[in-house]
Image (tube, rainbow, N blue to C red; front, side):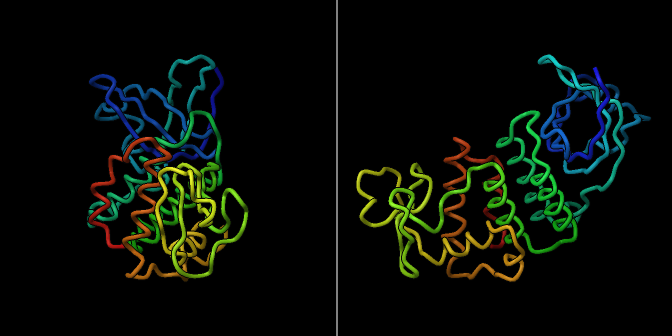
Length: 250
């Protein structure tokens, strides 16, 4: 076994014994790992609060080649997530980020760009910035980085661009927008406003336009409904934090 070091976001912990826990961490260099932290619940544990969910910590762990759990030997706090002490909205948004990382990523599959995205979003939530755009930005870029982003501008079947206004079919099974003539024969198709797709395209782009683009109130419900349905389809189930996200201002 070799000792490895990385920056990590704690995304889940489960009790293992009276004094130990199993931590799931999304790391900068190794992707998602699951490691046993022996003695982490003792009063004078060397881990202190470094394994609290949403904490960003520098870790040292022994990586095992077999299917056994990795062994966490050291964790030092880099940044705590304190927003939850004052804002339930920001706490639930942070937990939602952790849930999507847990459910959509594979073990030992590095995505440093996704780590930096999650780290940035959690940092901004920690500063009490507006929840709705941060959540939407994370969702769309997560899908992009994992190769799950739906087609938002061109028909997935014919390749023709969608209209510049009005409404257009969107196929959940097809993986994105459909032209009117390509809609026939597809299942799980919904009609969405072109403006909604244009907004999602901005939030899914690898530039900073999303920071200057507000979510109009007239589109808010459709934006949230479409992203919710697509993520549930991608996951194969509804995210557990979904019911709490309903209270978020969007």
